[in-house]
Image 1 (tube, helix red, strand yellow):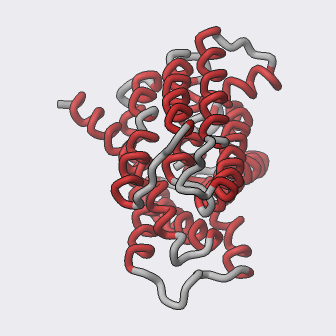
Image 2 (cartoon, helix red, strand yellow; image 1 turned 90 degrees about the vertical axis):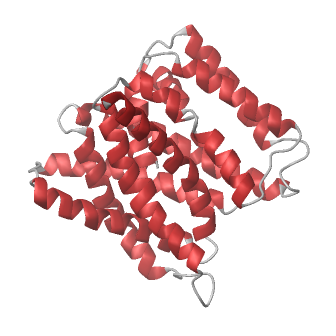
Length: 304
């Protein structure tokens, strides 16, 4: 029975994060990027403030708060700025495939900056993933004819990947002092503080009236893709190893591609189909390496 609950939680997490890309696209039809991000994290921050008030608010030193603020700047601030603006210019399917490269980039940055060894199977996976992304971005047929816009959007999504991978490396030491649960919760708080001035300075909506689908998408992103996925994923990780969870997390691009085809009518064409296949193979090979896998998977707690 417990095994069923664990795998149900992992399936729910994969579905919630996979559909979140479509939710963002729909929300952007009425809300501007800054207002969308602010509403999503302010709702989550209020919820977790009530949650911590019930469970007990932890005490951190000024230094720990400073490091939490710096981490929050990389993830979720920079991450969601890149992702949200990128999704204005590219498709949900492409974005989810690129975002799925985060574990591979964690390994790559670890090698470049920390001089840590990368297993050969992970090296092969990273190489294939990069080749697949290149094919995805410069596919000769483009995606529905929006080649230039999609190219810029995919580069922005790649910026989100670099931001998230950088956050993962920076969070290692702090993760030994503070639980990942609390780090994630405080990231929601600091993200709200960061985005509040931008929310006040820039336009709130793109249309005169807010569509019901866009409003529903914002609520889904806050309560489903952020709060709901947070509890589902943490529950699963408390029962199984991160390596087991990775098999489900790698399914996010598949969920996104299928859902975006049904809801948004998005389809990959030409070399992009080959690129998507190469990316999936590369991600699978990378996930077979257990080195740093747990760190990169914990990133998903705030990545989506």
